[in-house]
Image (cartoon, rainbow, N blue to C red; front, side, top):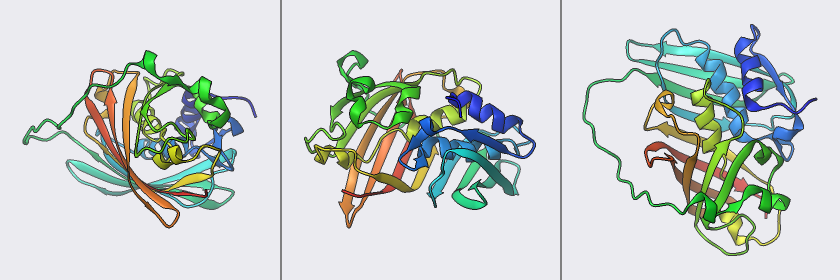
Length: 265
């Protein structure tokens, strides 16, 4: 299989009458696809069913089985469509097995309170961070499709324990025609924050479940660079829970993330 950028992979899915696309091993993380691209398959499949321009408001994902490189199929369904909100589900299928299930809500803007989120946006500069390429020996291969830097907080496998992980990141490919998938794949970039506790990697890890809430409709975000601020909330019994905030380069809070992850270290 040839190296393929994310836009090409998702565009094939969007144009496929059978909801099929394929990806190569460069998008893998161990024996499975990077969770962000696997989730993007489900997002594209659901978006294809929309009959209105409702933006995605929330997304819940369960990672059931590895998604190996090769062909994937998406089965998406509208569970309920009201005047303001559409609820959808999607399954990502490989070799006849359901590997990922997603539930999403798409909603029209409505009149209501406007309470700005509390933010203290004062991140370190991109120039002050450690480039992904300079930490490549301990980074998964899919990071080659992104440009980014690790900032203050715990560097994965840095051997300096920290409950925080911060970074700047952007896609190398032009994703402007797929704004929701652009943001979803950015939001899943952070590994388990607790990997900073280890000084030797890689250590196998993966997400079990993921919840993502969109503060701003992805279609309204013009930024290419995003600042991610993640915190490990707890860790016990080989599992860890972490939450994150995703900002655009102007400091606008775009999304809130929460994950339950497993690691083997």
